[in-house]
Length: 494
View 1 (cartoon, rainbow, N blue to C red):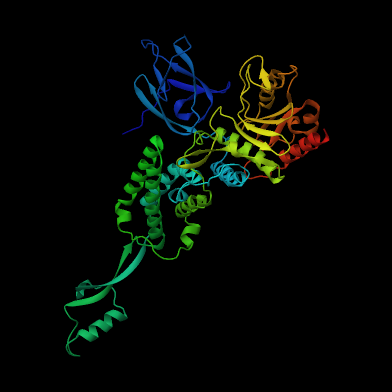
View 2 (tube, rainbow, N blue to C red; view 1 turned 45 degrees about the horizontal axis):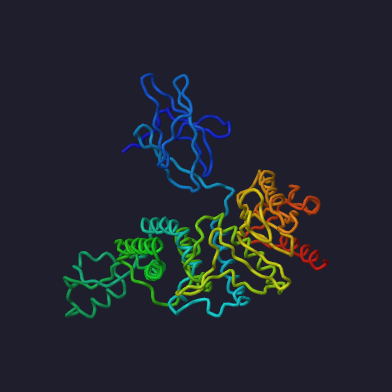
């Protein structure tokens, strides 16, 4: 069936750019676009549905209806419904977003740091509650959730174009059907001829070459898929609610792949695993091998599955990662006193605790404290706010002074605006005993690398007690370490 098009009636543009018909528009996630619909003389106001929401025009003039829409914070296939006609489009990823590799790196960093911090807690229990939970990890489950769609695409390509080899096997056939005569065929004829004068027998046992999908690579992938289905069933049994439903849905999808006629012709591999040339050079098989390789690299990060924060939202994960990197710096200085605030215990075991608007506090040996999403309001103590309730992402408390960090992983060109919003913390959080301003420094943490911008320079930090610090997954923490060293020197000098 031919794909519908807008017929030149529906147009989009962004930021005063030129208008483009829907079929030629380049949409990116979390962006705002102006749309216009060209009406025929008899047409009424158009009904525009995008991502399930109705977008009514803001104005109608000279036979054209104008409106505005915002793309969701995800990429992929989307649909417009214009007066009952469905039109497909595509939303491309925001180039400012972190890569999927950085997402998994943040997960790994957080969960590798957690057991090290646990040693400084006063909790008398283990990281895991029973032997069953040792086989599962939060990092592994999050990896499955984030990357299962990419595995689906890889398997679809693999099933459509699998590798195959010619395999020879012996078969009885009529002599006129023999296509090739090799040494084995001649030896069989010699053994089975009744006399030297006899001609070739009516039926001959000869070698036949046929295409086979039962290659090493296909056999290993079938083994990996069987293991993945079993793993997903374990997650389904250990999870609750929506997590259990999703794990079972993933397991059913893997079972559907295994029932494909291609995989039914393949025997699961049982031997020692090695990386073949196909896994090294074939683009699809290489991606598939890498997907499973990353899956099982999460095995060393043993932490409970239950969690209350939205790991699938990268901005929330970046906030937690920044907090844990700050804790890591203080831990490496030997200053952790009690990190029990990072965890919560249940009957199932011990879990990282980063629930939204619930303070997670790490106490240091020098009396300082590091809090995640600490709450300040008009009746809190020893610090309060005289305007609105405030919940900074990261707060360091050193006596009667506070140092605040606000992770912003998508800030690029509007650092000034973001820093302007930080003034509410500098001016609005006061000491209860004397109403003095309590916040000494405020900083934005961002993966943006912009050494040329003044907000990142030490002179700006020292002069205004605020600015931006670059903090990127996979890179060193030198900028944040330098700031912590300055803070410790200042605290010790007092």
